[in-house]
Image 1 (cartoon, helix red, strand yellow):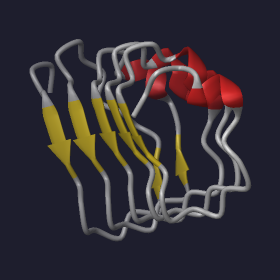
Image 2 (tube, rainbow, N blue to C red):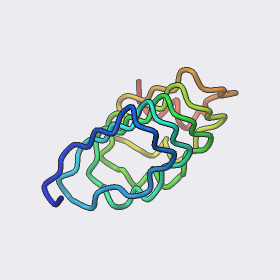
Image 3 (cartoon, rainbow, N blue to C red):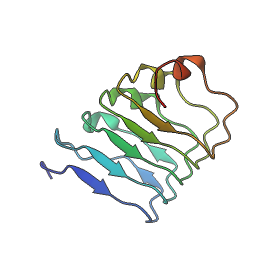
Image 4 (cartoon, rainbow, N blue to C red):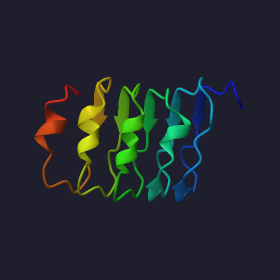
Length: 117
């Protein structure tokens, strides 16, 4: 799968996603409408620009997500997130982050000032 650019695993019954494809061409992953509680091991896909994990059961986002330096779109809507890690604020290419439908108490100023929509 060295030339894989996009992976679409929407609407399955996945409860965990821990193996991103290891390739420099990988750009987008769609994991929405599953039952995912954990996503980790982001270092295998450093060039990813779109991460769609909406409508799952994610309670905690791993701060390691900040290794995705090229990420432009992050959709975390309709999960169980009570907090977002500070490291999101260091993702300078992130232009769109969706967080609606989560039980967030507040968004840290470091994230609000980072320039994402």
